[in-house]
Length: 331
Image 1 (cartoon, rainbow, N blue to C red):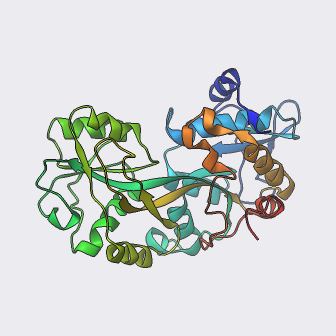
Image 2 (spheres, rainbow, N blue to C red):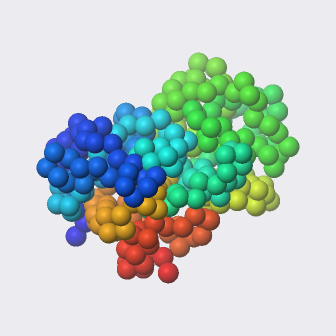
Image 3 (tube, rainbow, N blue to C red):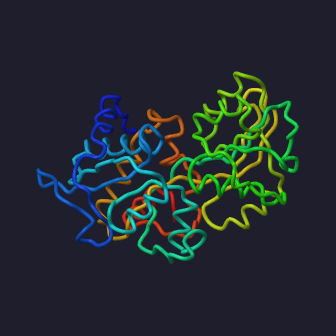
């Protein structure tokens, strides 16, 4: 039976976020530190306070720390995928949350990492929920399809990854996302649409998203759909880390048609130097923890994730690989 996370346990995990000694992963000597009780301490860098990464990290750390595994996890807030990659690569953090497409690029030395070179010490630990690229306009907007978007004003989520993915959706249509696209937090995106600051709101979030639902309280929305041809071009050009996503009709009120788009998976990654035994125990514990008490899509961090058998161009950590093979998630 999957372990239930009590609210008190989650709160304890959040309050402990940032406590404990900071470990590193650059070398085996720097990968860990000892707490006052002699227990091995690992650091997990998540996301901004209150965001999904932060909440999942707190819940995961609480589950691990309450399982008497011989080590503890200190979950701390971070500034997103790029910083988390750098922290783990340099040995300043042991585990990090991030979007898989960027982590895979870092491992392979592609995309934004062509100049820095490959971060070959990175390894996958767990896959997580999928963020769907979702272009939203008002139903009565003149922008009824991707090919109509010339001259539109765009709102895009914060971070390099969000901008790159938003731009990727336009490429098959011969369009570019303008540099002056407004960067706005997803919580404020719907308000930007309501006050007319933007014509198009671009979300990269799990489906359904409460941020999009909030827009529907004002008036009917339209979600732009890719075609099979444009979808094939996006995935061919993207390389590793992106997947095809279909948003079924009526997922959002008034959107009575299927939407074809793409998504990026979220993940936890670590240095290859982190203890194989400890990573095995960590993955096993998280796999058997009910994370739907954090977010409804929390089960995608375990057996409900259909992408574990996919080759994303970056290997699993040996400890994670051992467990995932035991449960049949990978071959």
